Image (cartoon, rainbow, N blue to C red; front, top):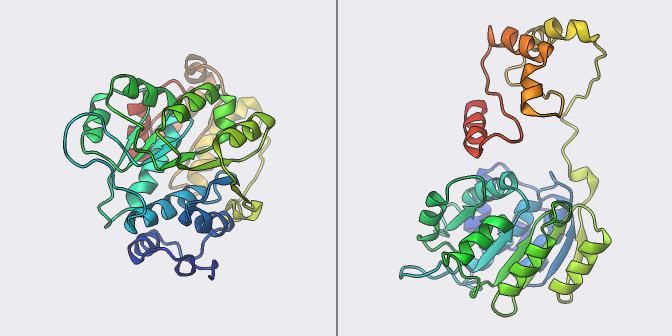
Length: 307
């Protein structure tokens, strides 16, 4: 099997068509290594950095197996809790939303339903998604446990369990929740664990969850930094206010993201140079302002305006 092209990975024609529509023709290193064992139903332990295409590395073979009817399509119709066949667990709402967008793109034309649930937003819209009986569920640990406790979700029918960014789960203190969720899965299932690093607690978790896993790792070359021009400018504090908007204007930056000091929202927006610079930028350009503690709706609105 030729793993240098998506055609050579054995994926179904509809999955390959969805990939092609996204503009991808050649799999990344982690995709070429992870897709074959995932298609075979093997457990997988993958070391892969963000930006290496790891989301497609697990979503594409999962959708392919659903297409080939090796994985059930969930519990269509009826009442009671949603019983997805695939669970993808992510540490943050941002990553969960990103995986959900990829799931939408890669499953186009297949009729495979998916849902995304995470905290920080009202549950009503997510419950509506669950009532459509998704086959694939993308979730963050806290919101998933909430919805399981409220009997909107059952993990009794899970056939594939993917744990994404395991080291981030560890950093954020989610490993006890991960173990609890894994214990709720009814019966043996294919399990894949993706992590940028492999600290001892993640190795221990892998031994608990995985059975005879295939171990793969992506190369750093997969991270697309060759298209990024990096430059450091040393500007006196007193000149930043005038320099930032002129930099954006003179270099014709059609889209730009400006990061300010990583402190509280109150301090960031009251910082004199930041406030004045933003006012100057806004005289010729518009853009949203967000901070880490902003409501999720602000992030969605900012992304929509920026795209």
